[in-house]
Amino acid sequence: MTDNRKAVWGWVLYDWANSAFATTVMAGFFPVVFKQYWSQGTDINISTARLGFGNSAACLIVAIMAPVLGAIADKAYARKKFLIFFAYLGVAMTAALFLVPNGQWIPAIVIYVLGIIGFSGANVFYDALLPSVANQTNIDWISSLGFSFGYLGGGLLFLINVLIATMPETFGFSDTSFAVKFFFLMVAAWWGGFSVFMILWVPEDRSTIRGVNKGKLIAEGFRQFVKTLKKLRRLKTAFLFLIAYWFYIDGVGTIIKMAVDYGLSLGFSPMGLIVALLIVQFVGFPAAIGFSQLSRWIGVRSAIFLGISVYLMVTLSATQMTHQNEFYILAVAIGLVQGGIQALSRSYFFRLIPLKQAGEFYGFYNMIGKLAAILGPTLIGLAGLFARWVLMPPSPTPEEMKAIGHLGSRWAIASVGLLFILGAVFLYFVDEQKGKDDIQLFEKRI
Image 1 (cartoon, one colour):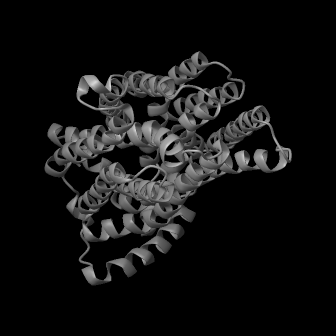
Image 2 (cartoon, rainbow, N blue to C red):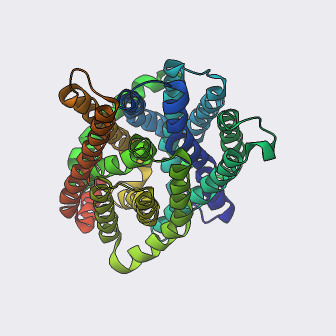
């Protein structure tokens, strides 16, 4: 544990770095380029399904890897090394998207999936490094600070990209389509460049060294995975929180990844949707810090409940949306709670687990997040296909195809609301004091 400000800022600046991928690529321009360039001429429900299933495949792979990687990193004193490997895998794949030609949706989705694996795999170790720069008194603040600067950093690059997209000739680009593809190179440079501060400034807790032979790390990681499962049976409060987190963070992640695609399916303009994402970023910057302050007054668990409630209202409102201005209003609402619910979930879990085994337990935490992220995009993809297969007449007119496409999209977004309801129900039964008692009893037994 350290109070070194440089270490804190090194950790925070990695969120500044990798958020460029989350905003410009995942949430912003990849869905637009995928639907209009790499899947050009394809039915909107088919392209939505491809994107949804691609997101689900990436999350499934990361979910399988995460707990084992976390356990390996604890054993080998290698959290930073693993973070660096996955981060620069993501950087390389992001740059590679620039090379994918028009109509080639399969290479595009494969490279995108590899980019998500790099992004998400690095986050396993990024989260596990949080105890190295924080303590019980400041963890909510530092966790929120990371998300806050992530919104600011990702938002700044996103704003630059939007300005270039609207005035490509001013910035030396021949047309918008080439400029948008060039954004992938800009994200790669931003992510890779700002990650250096984390590499240089963030320490790693040397107490995690346990003298394991490097040649046996993989087998040891799998054995540790099984052991962690058994440990969670004794840490019942942490396990219950993970179930709650499974559901509500699935809804959060689904909205992040599929919101632009949903807006495109309703016929909203791509640039208008990009503006909505900018709203989320710049509202999210102060709101993430404000949510941390709010949690001091009402409690972390109650603040998470508030975030879930806002997301549920946003989801239900989205099913009735008809005008692009309504998308902007919902963007403000999401920006107010998105960073807060993510940051406080990460720090709340810290209170429910043994500190010295943070890597393996945060591996599970990330596994749950990624497994959850499989369900939402899959639901969206299936709902769109269901509308197409079941409701589409034998020889539909263009107007009928458009109406059914819109209806399928609305069904899809409605299904996400159930995830927030289930998450709130399970979170209701989580008791932080009981979680601390579980830890004390657990540590006495080992």
